[in-house]
Image (tube, rainbow, N blue to C red):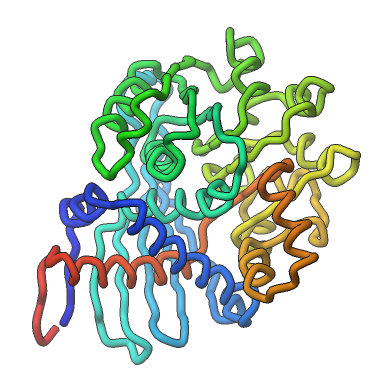
Length: 370
């Protein structure tokens, strides 16, 4: 049976998500990352292709294969907004379609992947976030779907441990609309009603001068970076100073996906690898980040200082107790930076899982004899 999941169907499934559903999808994604890093699956994953038209419209083609299936996701990235368009309106949306087949190439389903892509990318960040001991103060850069899903999953899983969320965005109105949408989403995060939300309106070109931003960043336990920025979102000195070093935080950066983009200051990444600042730098794919993550390439981070998240999952399963105690301590209380540019195996694994959930809940359109 071939299943079609429209945008409405995908959102219906996500709106009903419980912590148990997130736990199931997390397990699926962890295994996909483990296979990618440890079962030689990386060798069978073609790198995505990108085509940019003269008007700035970009199309991404993201194939993936596993022993049990194959997929391709097509993503339409809108051209940059004109300078005179203003920042108050909603950001231009990505358009995505994911096609999934079985191992022999027979069609299994097609998914409108707009909300799905935001969920799958955010879930990658949340795999490490779930291990953090302190998550009282969260700062999120951006107010699009990625920011929404990072915050929704954080509130769903750790709402009782979160005291405040600060959203940093060039448009205050857009950030407030995202917070309203977040507060209206279902899914069992009622214990997050006490969370205090704040918006900081910031010009990406002048964040160092933005009132209140430095205090928010330096005081954060968790920082989610979800913007396709071409300038670093905050100065490295804020986190490398004596005051900045005093707190060990978790930083997830998923917005940059081209070499001319960067969210995290490259100087901060260099400090992690070249000074006693230390910390763990974790990525979804080392190869993909060297091809597409502007901040990692500019920082010239050596390969031996980068861990793939699949290596961490494998270490947990391998059962080396002494090694895991040391690693767990760093993941729970140390400085951890997670950088993701997205890999196709994430779409394939989670897409198949979502089709299974759709069948279980009788969601979507079934097409016999496709």
